[in-house]
Image 1: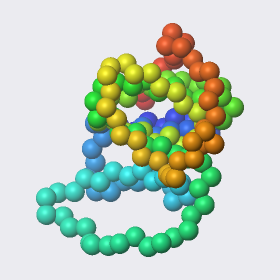
Image 2 (image 1 turned 90 degrees about the vertical axis):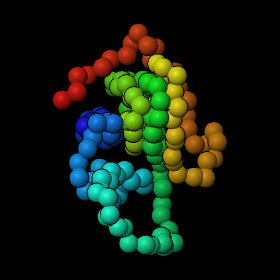
Image 3 (image 1 turned 90 degrees about the horizontal axis):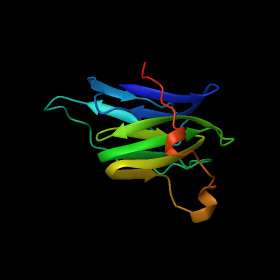
Length: 145
């Protein structure tokens, strides 16, 4: 299952649920994204040709983050670029999320292990602007379609 979080036509996040299963290669991002999110499902014996990646200059405007939830449950609160609260979603073990734009906050609902991947180098406080987010009682969830 794939969930797209948007605000007024702008993509905020892509959630790839742990029950997504399709044969072959599926990329959920366009070629313009500074972080690509793809899923691959191949049968035993499939080969992927050996390769190296070429040195290519890229301009990265925003830091995108990919979170892999290994264990536990995490509430993600989504915000517009203007810090307006949009909605919340719960991630569980096996889920993956690409945070593309806007803001986000988290609350650990069950002890969590997760892996984060993002562009570097990390520049500390210059990388983000913190703001006061919602509380757990203010979280709104939409039914998945």
